[in-house]
Length: 80
Image 1 (spheres, rainbow, N blue to C red):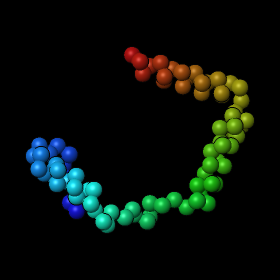
Image 2 (cartoon, rainbow, N blue to C red):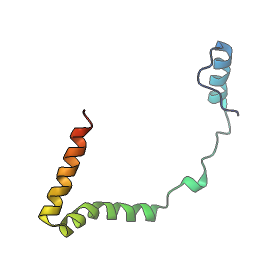
Image 3 (spheres, rainbow, N blue to C red):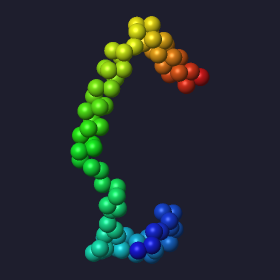
């Protein structure tokens, strides 16, 4: 099935595309390479939960303060 542009003005073409989508017996299969490995996902979640705390533990108070100041400056500069 070819992809149609969304801006179809012909009502008959729109109706046909709706019927085609509704009656399609063989829906397009998802690309198997897009599936995620569940073990890799679990490892990523573990690392993500530890990451911020581990980074903060390594930094000095002055370094954390400087990072926070830069972040605040970046947030406030977006409004101008």
